[in-house]
Length: 518
Ligand SMILES: C[S@@+](CC[C@H](N)C(=O)[O-])C[C@H]1O[C@@H](n2cnc3c(N)ncnc32)[C@H](O)[C@@H]1O
Image 1 (cartoon, helix red, strand yellow):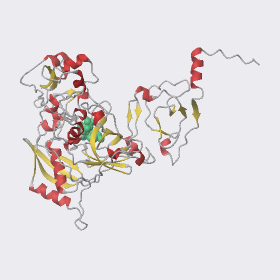
Image 2: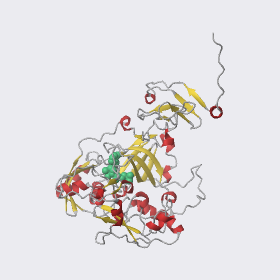
Image 3: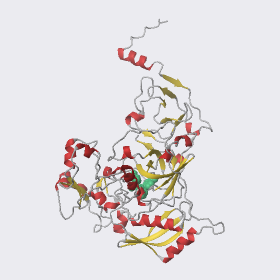
Image 4: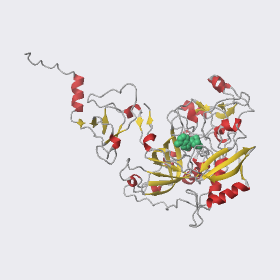
């Protein structure tokens, strides 16, 4: 029998690690799969990592289930490929540190738009659009707790997943419909087709009711998985605002002056049908016609892109005194709802540009540039923008390039045929016996008509459709109205409005879990 061998002395580093970890990490029993907790399946070993203050498993993807102490949800979407390095306590190195995030939607949006077709490209296009978001009980046992205090805000940021993008693909340059075929970098647009299919919408908060919020001015389709809600705070979210101390606000006791309660179907909402938005909603499409096909300057050198100037093609940015550009949320309309909020909260407005994260060199360079639409791409030209003098002014100002505001796609006139008008009246009559409107989101035929006008006046067609399928009928559904229309030169005409035959299906939550990163 061999005597027990003495262990080799631990290295200095190992001793230190052991000390650091001692008492901090403990192994927990396995989480059994049960009917009451189906989301916990499949069973895996889990550990509590005090350093990260969370439960972790061998696989990335565990999230702590809020509201249920110590319980764990393992999502079925584990990253493929090499396992992440384990810490000395066998905890997996937190995925968050690498920027990987396994998301769990806080809810699925119930929207008046059932398909991407006809869904506005930015929220301010159709302020009459409506949606409801119920916080899922699997996120918070008491969803209403998570919404406490939110009713004191007029607007909220909604972070969501473009779950209807189809396959996850994106290109470095995209052709926003509003630029009518011109290309620009994906990150300078609001294109849904981006490396992480995350959308960001500033919506009007109509009311909070229990564990649900009611929104208007939205650009998301029914069933959209929502990842987060954040209050819109002009002081933080608008570069032109100076941050002031909060003063007499008592947040803990929730003693803010409460917002006047909204009726969900707020009749005071008006629509701006002439709003135009930059949108990067780029439909993947084949280029079938060499004649009509937009020319793609993809293969130009970057030098060419920066050096070429053509006076006839450029659009100069005109700066009017007191003009505001709602760059913070990609809105370039001066009359949109979001902008009016910013104006209200800000007071005096100036032409703005956020320089806060840029170096001096870039500042001065950008201060001398103007964006132009050149051929089929967006370029910049020196010497056309003027900025207020002084670094302090610059830090408070934001600017959007001219090609956003003065994009080539114009507002369309919207007409309804007598038949369509009749359809609308018929649709809105609902069940006359009970005197109820048939619409779910709109209060009247008038409201529905305004919403349809708003959607169409912004020309919701893809570039492909606009250029190559001009004479095709265009369909979209808003609320229960299935709209058939066609587009002519400078106008859209509604031909028919029928009852959307099929009720819109909610996305199966289990199918909508979205893994970001891998
Ligand atoms: C251009 S994106 C802008 C969205 C958001 N305001 C943003 O800036 O991130 C709006 C368009 O995305 C499309 N869309 C809306 N919800 C979607 C979803 N859940 N999945 C895929 N596409 C969606 C619609 O076609 C809509 O016109």
